[in-house]
Length: 190
Image (tube, rainbow, N blue to C red):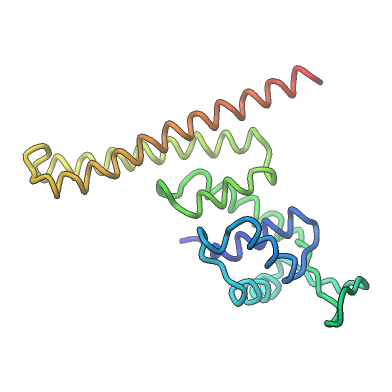
């Protein structure tokens, strides 16, 4: 089980990305990036998440002198050292061990700039291992229940995840390759 909800994970990412962010800043980013649609994140959950993260000591509120409009002065949040470590660990865990086509993996991908390319490659290689193990378990269940002799509707329940896992493995392999190429190009420049 994840120690951070998807909302909390996304909030830590956005605050890290902008160094400081208010609830209103985050709401605008959620709308711009479409998180509402694919991650099911709404306004109420954003403010509740900020409160939880603050209570856990992973972010700290900082009152700003910048005021725009007639409303109260916005409270901006910044990551604490503990929050930075928590975010890094969550990114690595999400990249390496979530199920195929999991929103959590997408959130990990969105947070790639917050970890090093080498760390990302290691986590993604672990993901390939994780997906390989998941495929083996599904194949064992498939074979133990009759394999190719199963009715089509039952076979489809096994064949669909096989297909998803194969596609995911190909995607992760390409991503690792691109990360390694970027690292190689960067090393050649410097």
